[in-house]
Image (cartoon, rainbow, N blue to C red; front, side, top):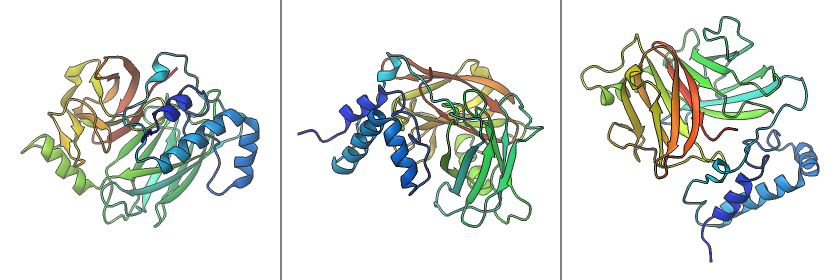
Length: 300
């Protein structure tokens, strides 16, 4: 008897809609939305239901990342209408999971690297909740979000950029995201650069590896097209602490990145460590004294 969900994971990965995060784009408890989605995309919803039920009954999900889409054509959803896309943020402390209020959020277009003309803005409330509406474009919103402390925050967060280009946002989405305080960040930085820490004139990148089903993926490597642009490369270990000796992503976070990176736009290549298959090649925005976070998974 199987004790994992590898078959269900693989079937979902080969379906163009099942493998997209937020399958139906419905808000929680919106039964009418889910029913309509099931009518429009019966096969995809059935595959996702099978996978969801398997995860609830088996002792584990597929123990290995699913890479079936690297061998077959992959497509991303496109917006159905020209209406703005609703984006909900639920911000929480990255270590304690306590909701984080007083965080300002700006939505920025992909080509506006300085976010000179923000397209939407909000400030998280005490419950960490914030809501914005962003323009869909032809392929979805492929821009990014700025996060920074709102005035008067007694425990300010580190300035962050959240890039959402893999895949672009094509439907309403509810995002739970961790933020890190300046004090926490300073501690992490000292682990990477003992006695020195983070250089305020440089930026930092954190990447989360994802497989064809947008699940976190162990065993992925990240490399800069120009390694000289960063002082330190790291991966998070099983204790969720940065390590310079791991060499690839691992549970529970499947994250890695680069510290003290020259500001600008840098190219990062993700590969399956065991086979050296290319998972993705992405351009990452780096600003000084700012942490850029991006999920990196297979792309068309």
